[in-house]
Image 1 (cartoon, rainbow, N blue to C red):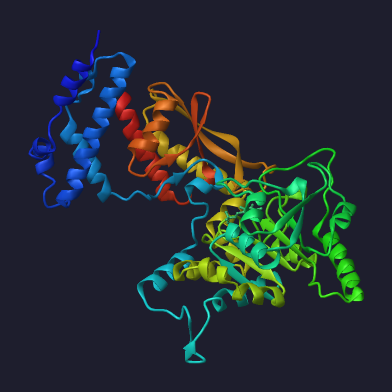
Image 2 (tube, rainbow, N blue to C red; image 1 turned 60 degrees about the horizontal axis):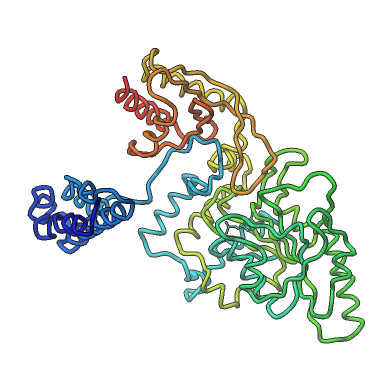
Length: 489
Ligand SMILES: *Cc1c(COP(=O)(O)O)cnc(C)c1O
């Protein structure tokens, strides 16, 4: 029977902070890390051990068994982890192109160069060389956005969630905004349309049903308090079967009719506006047929007052939320205090401007912007990458350790875009003779310097060639697998 006396004895058997500090493993840290950080790390490890002892006691196990023999090593590792970057490069062999957990879009070389230039130097961030006086940071991307989307005006903020928040708060705060029940989406990472509505203090008026919303649903819900008809692109899911939704074009017609009525009535009511949250916002057509994402220009051409979309989804730029539309509306947004709170920093602006400029030539955009290149890569290009990877792996792995083959597979656009769109791809499939898929996957993610994110499928690992960025990644995957098999063969 384990008693509290045993627990207390185990707790007392722990070394003191002073004793751990004198251990050789810790002594060697002197000069690399401030003493206070080392002491904190030792305290943390000792606390963990104490907790483990109490937990063991509570389970009826012997707390003394929880005393590790490597307390100084653990403390040293914990302290040293502060010196290592936490945000690190990874290799994405998952086949999900816009992978939100992996940073969504890798930037084009021109965008990276622009970021470096802006970061290392002073810049014209809020300075106009023509006026030789203060300028506006909103000016850098507005001309390009107008040219690329056909909009009268544009503004970019921190991300699309911020864009939605700002539009609702400027135009619908204290008023009603009508939205279809079929479009009350959750985008992941805690972005939910009803929550953003509440936060912006707009009154949400839900209309229609989950699967069907008709024009008359909107018409019947309009009151003198209605400021906005909101359309949300159901990015990450599709309703199929017995469904109906109202296109932006029809919402625009409904709003026009209502605005004529309001003017004829001579009231002081402001205009009813139509805003579409497009989510991904492609500039070029990606996907095909019914699964194709609408382009920003197409959405605007339907007559919406405002359209917003992300900078780092299908667009392939930095994290940003872009709002385009009428000059009257954008001017109001520029004056909203949220525009200051949600503004882009100079590095993001530099990356966004360079990315947008690449779109002036669609062929250049498809070549230079990695996200777009991967989404539009032709079968034979992906096949060539897969063959190259298979070849590299066959020289790194002994034939009696694993079986290597190139197989047809399906990639995904990710980022909540094109959820129904299967993108045919080629993957290198590794079936294990020595070791096993789960252990290898763990090794690639946890043990390799550059974590490699692949796909586990049954007892095999798949490396999707579509999301391999460059051939140095192929060499890196081969090195990692060579190292893994050296631990099991
Ligand atoms: C992704 C998405 C958002 C959020 O955009 P972020 O750039 O991730 O902030 C908002 N609305 C829709 C429809 C989306 O698809």
